[in-house]
Image (cartoon, one colour):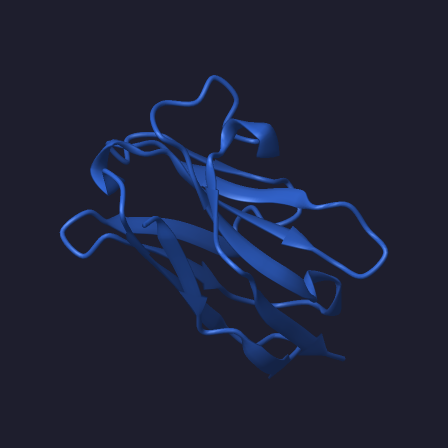
Length: 125
């Protein structure tokens, strides 16, 4: 059974930091492209960041570039999202996603086969 379980969300003041984790099981994690998406109330789900299966390529949305960092630990089947200098506009439910194999478009939600349940991040001004 495939599972992606996010943790680490919460309430933080603007300028603060959070680390999200996503623990995976039930598929070949080391061969998967991994990503974080987010969805704010009343908005569509948007790409935040992604990392290829060997970790050689990482991608960021312009809105988080320089503030967020994605890393993966294939030994622990876990992907992380370090978020620094958080802004109120970063408030959203954050989802991790995984593909069964490589992705032709890392930023497209339909490229991903597995999704976590989401974790809420709220940034107060």
